[in-house]
Image 1: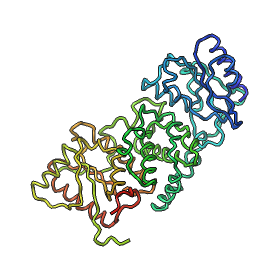
Image 2: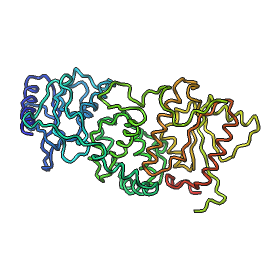
Image 3: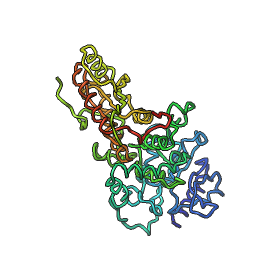
Image 4: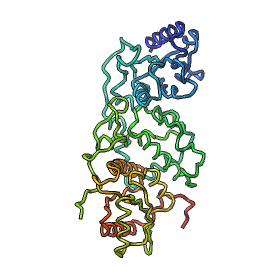
Length: 291
Length: 144
């Protein structure tokens, strides 16, 4: 990733020196030496710390929604999936395009992410970003796996009996600590006030049984991002307990596609499938002739 | 597990304009339906979101029924289209996570279908009696 990193540092340095942007939001080496972490460069000197490699997973577009960045001119490093999430925020008028400078990156695929195996949009569209950085000499057609190859867990869970499935998810969800990392890392989970942050907690989530609580939280969260998921895989990646949360999202995506046709959040035209409904859609609850 | 003498609790979300009127008509017409049902009137069946259904299950319901106008008859034009879109996804997700989708019933019942209403409640109650109590998604506060 030397080429992208060098180009990134150069572009960021130029932007900051010329005062075109106030800050550059990108990645830098982690001090713990485990890949890269999000990094904000305010000066041209700091821009020298920026880099990009196959551990730069975090979606950065969500930072732009924070109050700290409001009204600032920000240069943002975007991968393909990140751009899709950004597009959603742009179309919801949460972010001003003219205040952002997009440094698009032709994503080289992250290490060990099943999502990157099925990713069809590694690179944000060149006409929509201000500058596009590629690792030109390494460009080779990457083999795209099928959904089943990338997520073999889904069919294997579907083959289980109801009780086995319940036990499986009980094992998984009971580890949940409700740290909300999945919510914070998700680039499309962007409500101004989350349902689970309301003052009257008891009103939304009254269960005292831990499992019932986690079932509730994870089902609701999967539902809220059902037609917004851009498939970045951050939810499972950041989970400190390694709960395969992405399976819930992928399962919902599969169902959505099966019933209502394919829709790719952040790429296809709005409205998204769950924000509109029509008479011609299939009725699974039986239209019985009226008496 | 023995289901002998077990009486299920059903929470029914009835849309104000059709199904609630249907239930009302069943009452006026002295049609008998099981008292296992607890009707909650909602402005439209699309008011019922995943959270309401899950909370009903957590708080002691053995079955949840969502009744709305027939497709095409919605008072708000498209409300029940949203309901069916959402509920079919919720059912798949419930099944995927190991909860049973049979305990969630979506039915279109119009204002003059009193018989259909009582037959639906009767049928659903029978099914739930067979299935037994729903312990999986239960909140521990509701010890019976």
